[in-house]
Image 1: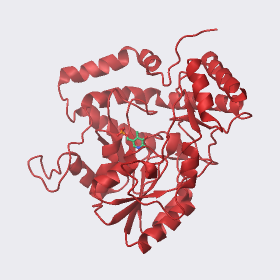
Image 2 (image 1 turned 90 degrees about the vertical axis):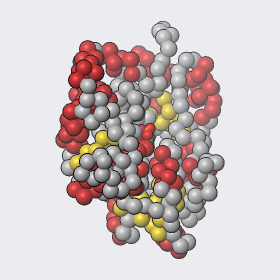
Image 3 (image 1 turned 30 degrees about the horizontal axis):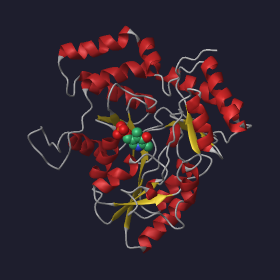
Image 4 (image 1 turned 90 degrees about the horizontal axis):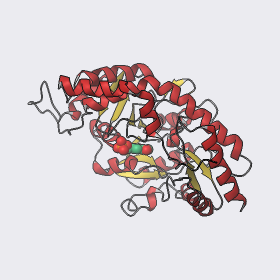
Length: 376
Ligand SMILES: *Cc1c(COP(=O)(O)O)cnc(C)c1O
């Protein structure tokens, strides 16, 4: 039996696979010298649009800025309510607080971990009665699976809300054969190294079909510039993606479709081996997942996590505390009835090693440890 340390995400094997191609791509930028907004940035934006079918792509410094840029472009302000899931990474709610608006926490569904459309509808009605001005909704495609846009979009529409999809974990996934990046007004994603499509530092992007929105986003990304960078027509940020990161992403994009398939094979294999002892993740009908995380629901999560740690199998808890219960966020309201499912999930989730290079022998070792721990 091999006892080599098991990585939670294996970026080293990917790096070895790409070999000198990525070295050369980086060196090319180092030598041509257009470190800021170089030709690789424009080319990446073109290729990302082609990849997901969005009309426009704006690359930016990270996935949090991607979210914030859209809120800034929409002029979201104090008194406005933006609806976000309670069970997500903090950035989704953080950007709402940045612009002084009120984040309203919506509960999630047990089988997908994603926003509950029925609770969204009730939360919008509640916010209106409470004197807030509902303006937008940010569903999150948690762990790589698209939220239920088929149900969420009509709720947003009848209430006059724009929809931005937080696809930081799901770029590359599809829903009813439509790629993530084409739902709602805009989609944000992240190229943080651990995301399914990651660079060698921070990076992000916004996708939209809206010609007016993309013009405003381009301006906001560079200090609210007008015709040139010394004409400032609005208050913006320094939110550009580095040319070197664009060069890395252009190389990684070449192997991304193959990696998505590999991730799915790993997930299916986990599902088959663990479905009889744990609640395994389910992909909704018509959806695909890029498996940013492979997450089990366990009655005694701590017992399994401890056994895994002892056996050298890394695990992680995404996320241990719903945002509505976080010290920095508990002054924001939750929709009617609170967020009981988010609370329940936060106490039961455990994510296992997941990446495209997880070989069957190592995966079997992980499966054996998990099964033994559950049975103990
Ligand atoms: C990672 C992540 C973000 C933020 O992306 P960064 O590039 O780290 O700023 C936003 N939302 C979700 C759901 C994420 O997982």
